[in-house]
Image 1 (cartoon, one colour):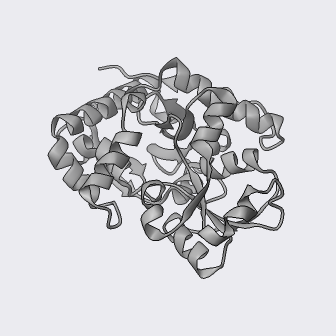
Image 2: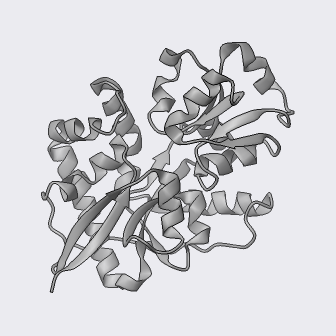
Length: 285
């Protein structure tokens, strides 16, 4: 009897590229399984993971402590930024307000309370007023005056200038200066009740899916751009290249150190109540 696996990820070019091989049938699954793909924004995926709704799912790294009892981390599929990552944007005339060390009166549109971007911003500045906003409405919140600045993830990191915004904070560069490590922004995780062997085989299938996408790059990019919210092919390819790279195929020891460092910094700052010991699942073929 075939078992249906739900594999969930965000509707973004990088995730679409990663799962291209699996979604298009170019990569086989472990015997006895078929796939149901689920597309949701990252904040909804973070919420779903709390109940173990999906067998394999993308989540924010910051959300993992709340689901560590249900999921293992896959060594493949992580979104890792090396000296780049989420940014805070504002209108140019408000840039000086963000140069101050006191942000206590500043309203910042954030793309979700469990996102890694929000955790990083709280490590950067302890006090500001978060305005929870769908990630694709952050620019609008800043333009309308609903927020003084916006915490930008996804392709907005590349398009903010053309929309007339000023980059007030580069959290990727800040994190690297602070730690010497890349930012582990997002993870793919697998439910523990599938068993370790199946989890390892699914990790292997995702590695093959990414490699398949690069072997069929033109087709994979065309498919990925469907999820790019109007970005052109040049920006889409740059965004995919930023977040689907050698770290995505295998986060390696440095990626694991970066995850542990993020959790230890959060715990030291009082943003994480207890120590987290993530367990990493590596692929078998």
